[in-house]
Length: 294
Length: 174
Image (cartoon, rainbow over all chains, first blue to last red; front, side):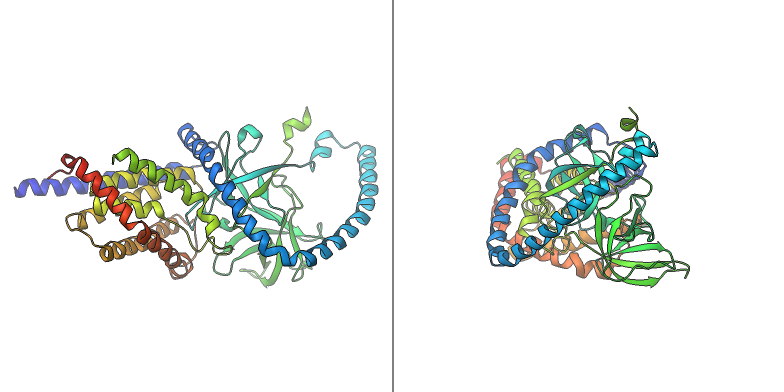
């Protein structure tokens, strides 16, 4: 009897070890630098996404209705603001048209290649959020556009307020967005985004390195010592490197400090976008090199 | 009550957790209060239906979560959910857990679960925050949500899982 008991115990221990080894193997597999998801993952994600979209959107409409009622009082104030913005917009639109025409003429005169001309011709795909992960350290969102709609990994995702994240993996009909609050320099899945300051695009430079959860600010590093960026400046993506699009609002500079080695500066940036109750997001499609060359 | 019904209900719970819950949590608290309803259901299975069933449900629903919300690494939820489910069953399946007992066990298991997940992410350097911060930031606030859910679902969940055991008692070996 005791022998049997011992055997049972050993069996339990044995199974635990097997389970642990499997667990490490799966983690290792998922951390490896894979370009695409495997087909069971794609199938599961697409199926789940198909069901989830029936729930998330109606819930959003109902919640949105109540929020709208709450906002009713602010409507007058908001209208006044919007009228001012619209006036400024119509003035700037005229100027913009002139500058755009001139720019095109100059590009033609300098015989820009087709690729150079198309470089900043971004396409904004509108997508619906269909679910939010329930893991505090992995707040990934799922959206209802996938590789069939032209979404590719590493595309930037924004809301009307600003950049919220990057597409981390795609399946045929859905894709997963990793929010920029998951940015971490030391993480194995790190992507660095080059940023600059609105109004001084060719003078300022920095890289978004990590999000500090304790202060809920994102750290911008590798800023030049002579950089003139000031508190309350708007931080936008610079598009250097041509992986991420330029001109997406990230947030505002909150403070500027000397960096770790004293050679460069760092700044903490308050994010413009909020990450709760998201409904519509935009995936920014950067024109691909092959497409432009055709 | 068949096993199919339990799996169906848990699948529905899994979908609701990712779609309806983000709207019920007030704006600004989205990353502080995170629902782990599937885990609570696994614990109910461990308490009232047996450790092997809890292990099975924990591993499969954990894996489902890992695959569908895959962000950094895969397998953490499956392993931890299965392990905690199994050991809760091992410790307590002989005793007839009362409401107080069940709620306190679920509370402790939730803290353990979040802690284990946190340290897995910490080991792989996905997160760099300190444990003390994580505890105050999201582990404790989410604990209250989990406890509230456990209290609300106590009676139906117990009935569901116990009926399942009674329906096919030969599955409960020894």
